[in-house]
Image (cartoon, rainbow, N blue to C red; front, side, top):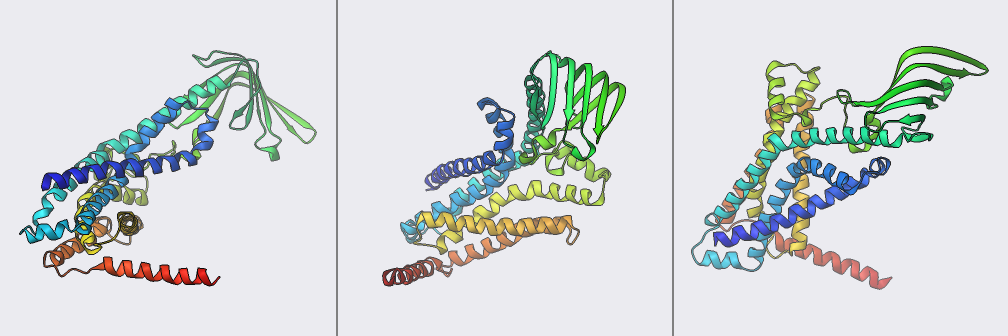
Length: 392
């Protein structure tokens, strides 16, 4: 019995993870389309960037997939009267918990590994790859002898370009983004292009040139030995939701979070609060796999008779309620309204309490039968709207 339940849980879990992750990645790809088209990324580059984003999505996909798996499995068993047959054979609902509890613990362990290690690896690898691609693309886009206008909306010309070293000769650089100041034109015999990975800037290093500025009918000329044009790559990838100028707590490794919390070396008090919230979040979301998996068992028994399609919708709605409570707790913790530990773990404690109470009621066979009520309401609405449609 436990092997069959565990097998069904695993198959449903794999389908749920694949479906939810695909939907999230497709949605993210649509948000990133301007950047992907602007950088002219190949299929391998896009696949690599998505691979680095997977851990940050999986930390949310795993709890809901675990809950869906347990809920749909026990909902099918309840609807097919398998639970009734097992209870008639002397097997209580508590004796059936071995497989879902073991399955939820496996999901918890996987989510914990992703939370403590894989998320920071994915974020850092994502940034490094974007910097490398932007640097490489910039060198390729600056074609020798061609006016390039697709780098941040600026106009750039170089007579000769070395695609390997980034060294350029006979350079013309025009910036008309600040038209109220007349814009500037820079001429230089040589220069280099490279990426400053420390701050995430694309840098044009021009040497021994002149800057021309036209204001109304006056022209000002300024000679220089070295001139740096720094372009913030965050603007190039603004729709990716990433920033190179600062490291956010959710992008830090577990060790870096603990070190910052221990030394109190955050740049501000609010940043320190975010660090503390992130530390609890790294454990609270994986624990949600176990809590929601346990919560799904009495929930499935309560909605006996409901179709699996409607069961998916119900499970998603309840997970949204959980995540809304979880997000509200994080917001209150970051603003200092509640202590970090209490606010972040509040949603888990609430759903665990409901799960234990529900299991007790189901074991006593005194739990609420919401499935019949739900189906009756659905039939009533169908008849009501059906009559209105027929009258029209």
